[in-house]
Image (cartoon, rainbow, N blue to C red; front, side, top):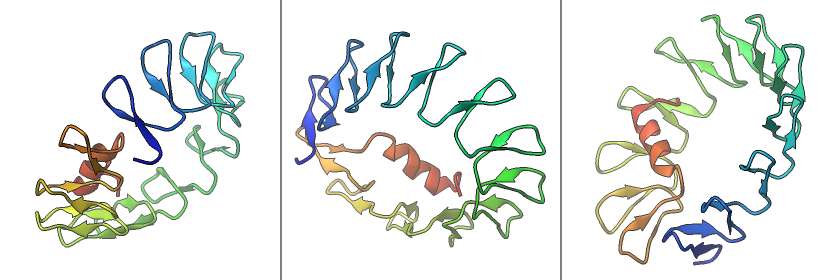
Length: 174
């Protein structure tokens, strides 16, 4: 399979991943910090003694926040484009007020099941909504995009895909 390899742990990992001193696989470019943990490229050790991602900076509240975040009326930092909704909470840019009186992220729709789902989600034969790209496998179950039939005869799914699929079916994120 292109772009992946079978690690000594029996799982598939993206090409370029490496086995760290901690016995776990890490993405290409990650480095071992002074704290003995692996961090993404561009991370740096802040004045607080913790590692932060590239672009984060120390703000007046004494904490590190990503670039472009602004201080809201609630005293918290929010991503650019966020807005204060009728419910008194900040929501991401493009969020909308749904028929259920709650705010939903841009790209969600109201399904026939009465729950909000991500754009492109579709109702499967099992009556549940599945994320775009999900497919019905040889085992009669739906699997997230990027899944494949592994060497052990069972479907290997991208990390976190099953949880994302379950959240979409429950309408948690939308």
